[in-house]
Image 1 (cartoon, rainbow, N blue to C red):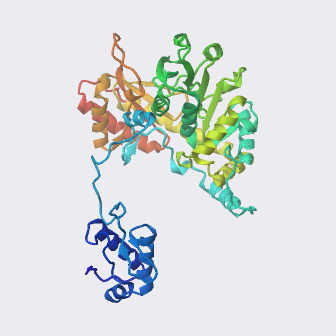
Image 2: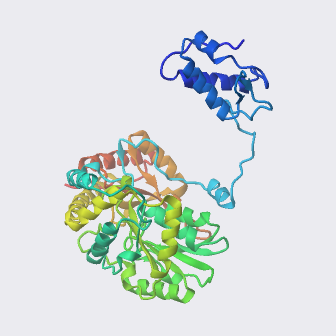
Image 3: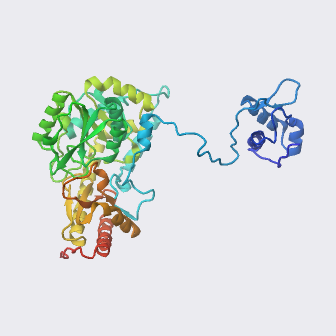
Length: 498
């Protein structure tokens, strides 16, 4: 006799199903055994016969019970392969991990330097922006208007994105970034990361090579490496990518650059190097991926025009994002594609996820069209310029005199070089600062290669400031200075400024 504990309530049918399936799995009800009658089981458990019948019908539909008109239900013979869902199961070692070559490359990648699950009390996390800077009231009004707008039906939209947003972006990019394109060249994506991934998948094969800034954006490098293509690291200096070091390797099918604000060191690629890069790309028939991740945030002068604006050969793929100006949680960005790539990128986007969220696209379009977005960007630029000034002042007062700051002219972060710190000791300093409630991030993971035969580079930190108040920045740098002093007593502090 099968034993059950009484069950009542809304989930009784599911519990009866689970119990019977578990007893089939562990052999309590062997193959061919007769299951209790629905009438008797219902009486024993104090539930309706309909509840028991529904559980039996589900088990029969899944092949665990065999039923026929006028006969008692029996355990299927031979029994189906059963997975017991009644509790956790340890399956380690029961099956080899079967992955594609792409999957094996991804599984073997290290991702050092990524943020902790829990933010520090004062977190200099790059990529985070202040929630209070988000234009919540304007967004809510525009969102409600779009939500209430009548649609004939709810269905998928074209993979390239909503037409109103692409038209709005066409005008905005012309005004703000000097970029000329047709709306048809714009592809709306889930943030710049998806744009980078599409470029990697569609433009690189195993055995190809890609040019990459050294140091550079780790997640982009990983996307390109995952294809099986070879990394060709090109050094950067105070003016961005050193085009004199571009390789003559004809396997290079793609070059990834951040010309308006090199990540992480902050250099701006001058016109001579821009032209040299485009000429190199033309000679080698290489695509240039321009990641304009925070080009709107330049201080003291207007933002630099995009590299795409001087591209006459159709080699540049421009990637833009709303993550820094609005929020990374929106997951909205866009590509401006050379005409010959439009069709295949649309198809790949459709295969990946059909399209980006439609309501959010239309809200953004309305904010761009009525000027609210550009006003918001100007306000955010002023706020972040104020934060940057506080950061630089606090570094001068609280950190060692030989600390050097790089990349201050634009963007939402700086790199802090500490000459007394070895690069391999960055994690120790990071952990010591976090123990005091201050989150800072090492710069070394952004370098792809070591420097054999050269003087070792000093250790450094990436300090993002866009999510912090001026008071938090001041307090965080004061604590960081104390951590450095206790960790490295030989470090000379800057004299206090009055």
